Length: 220
Image 1 (spheres, rainbow, N blue to C red):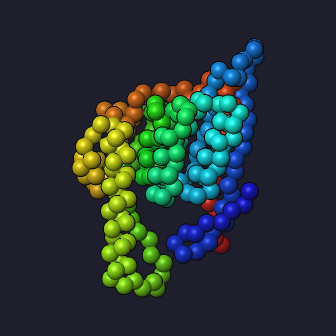
Image 2: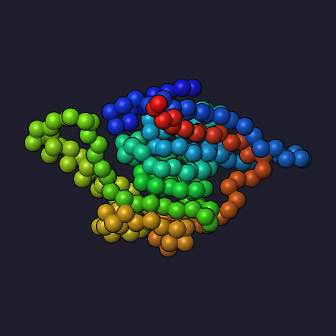
Image 3: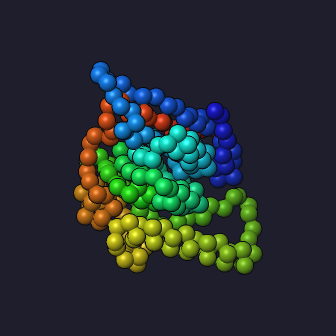
């Protein structure tokens, strides 16, 4: 599928791929006992989050109620990250999230959607504040600037609340960590309460894997 998305006022072409496969081994495997694995190797934007939710919707229609979401993401849209978090937390299903590389920015909120949260040993988490992008030559009135600033403050507050609820930390402590642009390795994230277990194994042999990948192409 070819899709387009806005990037700082321009439109950039991007390759977006959703693929599905099974990892087979010799012997008899009861596929119904294994969770469906979704590999989310993408930014948190409209097309990737829609693909994630659609994949889960389709599998739940087939009776699947156990999912592993592997995440490596540079972050992206606060709107889509918070929406995905609330979706995962509200599902009548068991969701495990697993950092298999780098979970940055709003990707941390997506990661918090897991009831159980895992990380590979060689990974990182990045917490930082929220920024606003303005197209070139845009002009805003005072009320518009106030509205944008209020929106940023609410976004930071909501992100901090999600992380605080997941880790047991105080909202103010999480907010301070975000404003200081805090990077955590898996051991530090575990001491924070963000990670429950550090584990190299991602899923069992024979599991069904759905891949959500996104590669941005630079405009010539």
